[in-house]
Every structure is written in C-alpha cells, then in structure tokens.
Amino acid sequence: MKPIVKGSIITGLYLGILTCICMSIIVTVHEKTYEAYVKTAEKERLNKQMAQMLPGIKYNNDLIKSCKLYSDEALTNGEEYEFYTAYKKGRPVGYIIRSNTMKGYGGAIELMTSINAKGEILEVVIVSQHETPGLGDRVLPANSNWLQEFKGASLYNRKNFAITKDGGDFTYVTGATVTPRAIVNAEKSLLEYFSKKGNRMISDKRCLTDE
Amino acid sequence: MFKEIVELFKQDVWKNNTILVQILGLCPTLAVTTTAVTALGLALTTTIVLVISNVTISMCRRIIIPEVRIPSYILIISTLVAVIEILMQTFMFTVYESMGIFISLIVTNCIIISHAEAYAMKHTPFMSFLDALFVGIGYTAILILVGSIREAIGFGTVFQGLNKLFGEYFADKYLVVLPADKTLIFAILPPGAFITIALIIALRNFLSRS
Image 1 (cartoon, helix red, strand yellow):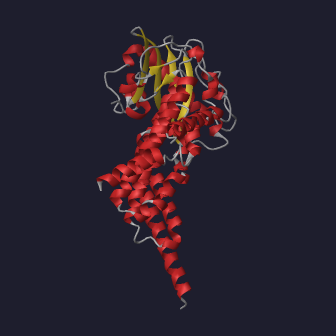
Image 2: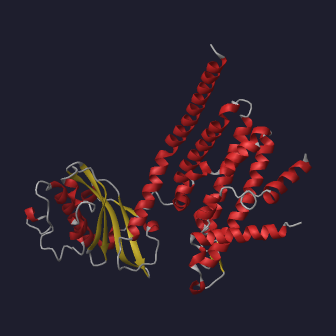
C-alpha cells in the first residue's frame, strides 16, 4: 500500500475514534442530567406562567414559596394538589391550584386554575394533555380561545356550571365533547370544594420542591 | 521558572491582551457586554472552556496527528462547550437563559483555538493551564470593564443581577451610579459597545506608549 493511502487511513481512523469519544462524553452527560434539566426548565416555565395568572391582583408574598399540598379523598382522588396562595397584608387575595382530571379522552389533563377571593376563576391554563390533535386539543389556547370562557366564571354567575350539551353555557366543539366536559367538570368540582372549604384548603403540608 | 510565569502573566494580561492588542474574540465581547453581570458570566464560561481545552490539548499534544490538528481542536473544544452548556442548562437555568446562543458560540471563539494552536501544542499541561488562566483573567477584566461602563451609562447601575450568577444573597448588592432618568440608551446599543472598546484600546495604547 502506498504510504499516502496508509497515512490517510490512519488519519481517518484517528478522527473517527476521536469523534466517537467526544460523542460518547456528550451523550453520557446529557443522559445523566436530562431528568434534572426537565425539572428545572419545567419549573421555570410554570413560575413565569403563574406570575401572569393573577391579573389585577396586588399581592406581596412569594407565590412559589406559598405552595402547600392539599389532598382530599373526594376531590383529589388520593393525589396531592399544589395550592398557591397570594397574600396582601396577611389576607389571602388569590389562589392558584394545580389540579388534574383523569376524564380526558387521552387520559390525564393537568390544569392550573387561578381563583380570586370571591371564588371567581381568573385564568385556566392547561399544563399538559394527551387529547386527540385536531379534536380534543381545540381547547388549547394555540387553537382557540375556548379557555377564555372561564374568565370570571363562578358557581354563582353560572346557573349550571357545565357545557351546553349538559345544560350549561360553556361551548364545546362538535365531535369533541369529552375534553371540554372533563375540564369544565374538573373546574366545577374545584370551585365547589373551594366555596365549601375556602381558606381551609390551605394545608400545613409544604411542597417537596421547596427548599 | 518563576520568572517565566511572571513574564507569561504580563504577556497574557497586558502586553498581548486578547481583546485590546490582538483584537480577538470580539463578537461575544461586543454582544454580551450590555451589563456587567452577563459580561462576567460569559467571561467566566469562556475562561473555564479555555482552561480545560488548553490542558486537554496540551496533554494530547503527542497523540494529535499534526495534519489534522485543527479538526481535533475543534472536536475537543466543541465537546467541552456542549458539556458545559448541558450542565448550565441543568444547574444555572437563569444564567443560561440570559446568555442564550453565545454559549454555543464559544466554540468559534478564536481566543480558544489560537491558544490551543499557539501555546498548548508546544508546552506542558501545567504551563498551558497557567497560560489559559492568565488569558482568562485578561479577558474577564476587559469584559467586566466594558460591561460596567455600558451598564453604568445605559442603565445607571453596575452589577445589577449578580444573584443570577451567585445566588439570592446578591439580589440587591449593586451600585447605583446614575439616576434612572439620566441614562443614555446609546451605551446599550451595538454602537455603544464599539465606542467603549475603542476608547479602552486608545487608553491602553496611551498608557503603554514608549
């Protein structure tokens, strides 16, 4: 074999091996940290979202640190909901609750709801869902402004807190009843609990993510 | 040996300062020095990459095939940057967000590759380590200087947001040099960066004239 060919092969092999070593280092680091990264990024995103979920309400405490865990056999089904409270001069003025419902068409739908002291819904945010693209996911803010219908809704100003098909006044998309129904019913039971228990929903149990 | 180190320090920090004399690596220098803290963040990250890459390349200098040494440097440097980027994303998310794309651009920072080629390939790992450290000190100093000047004129503060780098203790540890209504947004815009660096280079030339 000519020396130049031999040299090229050696150089090529050398670069190939170096690339493999470098790639495996990156892949290892990525795998070891991926879980932690998803958690921080996710937390960061939620924190930003939460800051925008209490429009018009002035509060002076750190929302993230107010996180308490709430569980109740009937409402949370054995799970623990995160319950954030906004205080002004020691009085609670707004609440953000992270809840979920298992009644979605594709399983669990994670929701985040902000409620003011009067028991009116301020915002509803869908944190995660697995609904059918094009049908159930029409409820997402990217596809429609359906979630806006919750703004200002409470048990008192809606005679029947349900979708129109069930006799209420929340609209739904024909062919995709399950998703809106699941969300509306989840919000309804949340509000019912809230009006019954009010501040007693603030438990003493701190969230694990708090440091 | 000691004399050699002192001479290296003088060379790297003052006589051959990468920004002021060699005018190398200006892209990130101009882009992220809008505030002192982002400048410090990028300077520290670049220094860390520089130190590790210099030491690694110096250790491998006998097995790197000379004909393909440049691709080898790039592979080693980009691996380091990728790893550091992943680690920052995970453990220092706010810093990562504020520096954005400039972390990946460290790969193309010519300071790092020029020191790999001009120094690390010819010297022991220990001397390469010192060289990288000194270059990093010179680079960091200039970046902080430019960042502070621009932040002081543009926002009226210096070192606001240190908590993003070093934790909540520093949340309100910053200087206020100008009232908010007397600031000049020009300093924050790209021309402000060019003019600031030009003035610093002029000052350095003035100080070192023989």
